[in-house]
Image 1 (cartoon, helix red, strand yellow):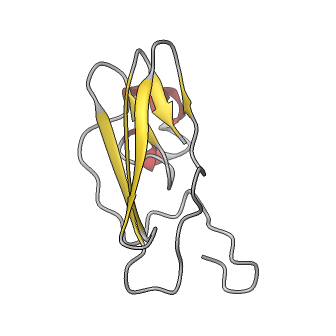
Image 2 (tube, one colour):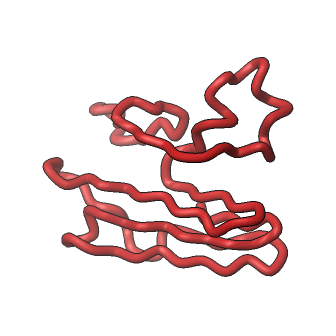
Length: 101
């Protein structure tokens, strides 16, 4: 988070963990080496299996706005589940492809 503007840099992977691989963006991997192992902050992307992402802002003064996420993609099914006073959001999605952003 930029402390002056309070904007989030969605490509900053500090303090993140990841599992799996995103082959959908593989063509960009020469210029952006993290693109196949990291998805931008606040998004989940699925191809063949269900995908999940979690935003956890506990321990900070921040929360995530309600109804901040959209689901897209052919046949996509997904959700954004809020907890801990809107400081934790679990995103999930499935589809061919499907995304929650």
